[in-house]
Image (cartoon, rainbow, N blue to C red; front, side):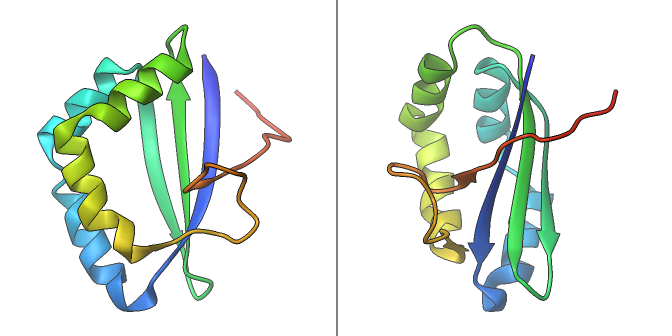
Length: 109
């Protein structure tokens, strides 16, 4: 199992809409995440900085392939088309990243 954390900004004017969308997340998006071995997925909001922190656990053997399957899914792509404009990627993110990856520096089970 691999724990993954990511961070991105959010447009403060769209926070309520983002909350509503995620309270009613599309089942097709959730199904694709599960099929791609993503579990224990949470998104946290930090105000007033307007940052989203995403955490999940990856249970698969080939993250690149599972992540590509998520990106190719038509329902997920529609979801991203709605959510993406609400997000504000960090300038410091890596090449090819939307959400910026984070390094795990501590864990306690």
